[in-house]
Amino acid sequence: MKNLKLITAAALTSSVLAMTAVAFAADGPHDKAIKARQAMFQTYSFNVGILSAMAKGDKPYDADVATEAANNLSAAANFGQSQMWPQGSDNATDGNARTRALPAIWTEFPAITEKAEGLKTAVAALVPVAGNGLEALQGAMGDVGASCKACHDDYRAKRR
Ligand code: HEC
Image (cartoon, rainbow, N blue to C red; front, side, top):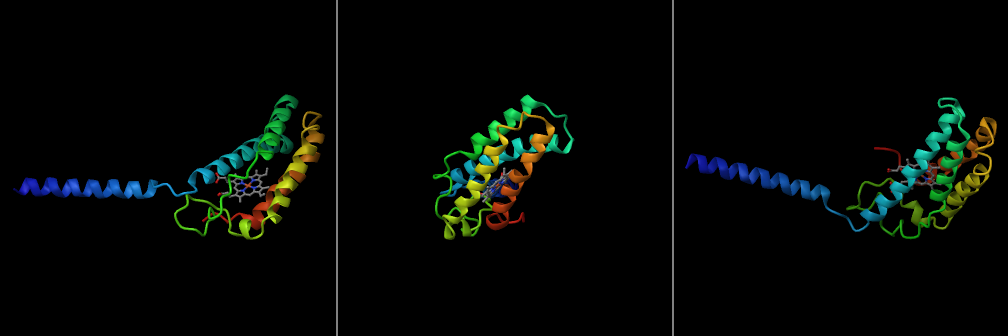
């Protein structure tokens, strides 16, 4: 009898744990879009990381690698994003996957598209010169970094 109680208690505990796990993993209605845009930003970041490391001298300059990273960044910066930002997928609405997207993105639309255009313009200037030597790369990276920051300052929440 005693053993049965123990077993029941153990079973109960594990099912409560399983339920908790399910609760954490539960999909909100916008999680796929949130994850897709975060993956897009990770692609920005990966390629900017390669280019910045070269520009700062932390990684040897390589014209082919710089050109490839600039082209990748350009492809990602020109992604169609219309389905990545559904209404209600901000960081103030409960039930979303962890997102740092501030509600201002939707209330100030289309102002935010100017920030996205700022990035596209900076990347369009980078692409043709990234393979033209270290100085050319350095000259173009400032505007790219500034365009990322300009949007994050207004529309991305600080890390919690
Ligand atoms: C038009 C606005 C905008 C521009 C331009 C922009 N970002 Fe972001 N970025 C955001 C927002 C908003 C988020 C938060 C997304 C979320 O959590 O749902 C974000 C999130 C990120 C993240 C975190 C992704 C994750 O896994 O949670 C990284 C890294 C990032 N951005 C890098 C960059 C880099 C590098 C650039 C420039 C090349 C850039 N971003 C340009 C708005 C922008």
